[in-house]
Length: 290
Length: 283
Image 1 (tube, helix red, strand yellow):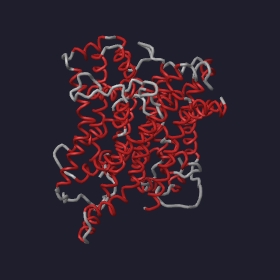
Image 2 (spheres, helix red, strand yellow):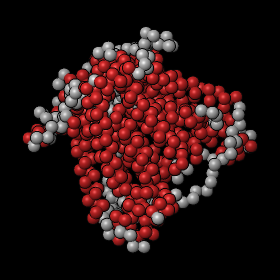
Image 3 (cartoon, each protein chain N blue to C red):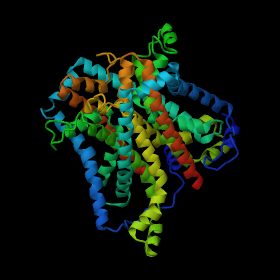
Image 4 (cartoon, rainbow over the protein chains, first blue to last red):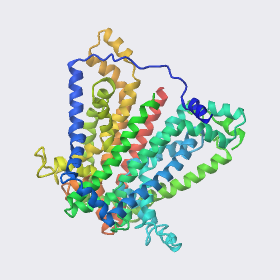
């Protein structure tokens, strides 16, 4: 029963079909533009990225397997995954909540909040790190010494890395959800309410199913961004081998220490995850964004 | 949640001009409060701390820091490179978007995926990736620009690729082909159609994408670490300058330069907000 309900609810009001037949005239300009765009993307993205793959496997799969035999590297990969999961959980809860508030309610300062929520996208990661150190630094931070008194070390430890990562990935979920929520409107919830559904039921049965794909995109994008954060983490982590060194920090460390194979192999792993995230989004998106 | 809650909800897009209203209920107000506490602790208070720390040294110290020769050189390099990259994106972005929307050919979906790769790829990996083609003694192209200024340009170009494309694409998809055909049937040349019909509708999207790509370029750090060598007066960008101040325990200097970057980010955010309102008002 749940299935049919969900299905009916998820489909947005039938938009008049506007798929146009391919009416584009194939003039020389069309081909020229196609060539320019393809060549540009090939030189800027495809070729360089493919070189990482060939460099990684230049000597077979040895460089990948040796990564997993290095205990410090395993710790770094685990730390990256751990931090990314926390960042995704926090940003999902915050993102769903704040998107609902922004779309469904009016309150003073809403426009300002709406603009400020985009700020993390354009702030330099180094500035993010600096900002967190200034407030949560154990010695001179605004709140750091107090928190340290309670036994909570933020900077140069895992909570700081999680905060830095959460900061830089914060707008992604909201940017996915706000348009979806605006699109679905409130009619179905009002109908459910008139039939006696309470707030929690309306959220679980109607709102959540209709925004679930928005949440999936948001989670995937947040995950990719969180796994890859480098600058902000570099400032707040202290980069202690085997403790607060994440996988991205390890790439730099290995490259600068002339361990090119190790650097390429780690980079390959990270690139695989982010490309996988992009491909997943590309595959599921068209079905839902008519 | 109470039953008044739904009744109070209004469709989000109704235009209103009646000043700030408040439709918060008790539970949603509580939710907003919690969200604001988290947002302040994570974002607002730390960013305020940057500005306050910069102000601590006084205006003269702030001015001396950002006009010091090495810092000024870094800021100049960052801003001018970001402007140049944005100019390239303003041309290439709509071009790529047009190909993705209007053209049909085998392998187009691969191009779609390629646009998003710079956004998802960890920046340090992006640097390594570019290094392997453009900054290597045995580069297949025979190009080695590592530790040179073009490397900064290239890195910015890579990380800012998606912004204009992704802003323009949805607008182009919405554009009615009929209007263009009407213009053509009335004797407009393709160029005139482009200039009079297509370009005006794309301008807000292009401007928004350009602003985002400028902001992203100015704040870039990760992709430059391995690629540009961070040579003072040559390839050192603003973010690197801030980091070296942090590492030398000169927090006030770091915060001063960071304030300049924050001002640029804020300006971009304001610009985006204005564009959004304009487009929404036009309907």
